[in-house]
Length: 97
Image 1: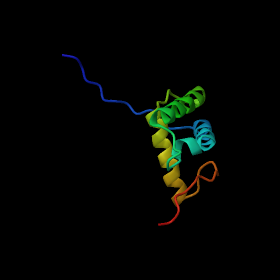
Image 2: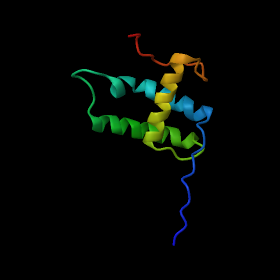
Image 3: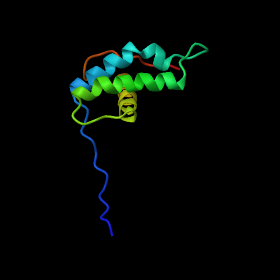
Image 4: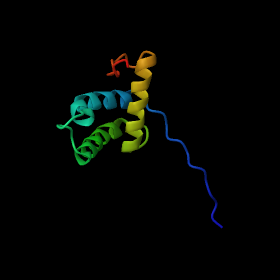
């Protein structure tokens, strides 16, 4: 019987990874998050996220996949609304409802 090992957590994002992620997402923000008839297709968005992954991984403590980057971006946006961002960068916040 094979021994089942629990899935290990990845290392936390370091400042360099976060800085590259924020820089690249803001650079491609219009393509990734635009709404309406002129928005990008899911395939185009996937290619942009892959490009971002290739920019982040050279400075990463461990290899990151696209889902890791998307989750980190969501966490940074949420954190930016409630308390100061660790990098001091302004993240786009949703308008108050």
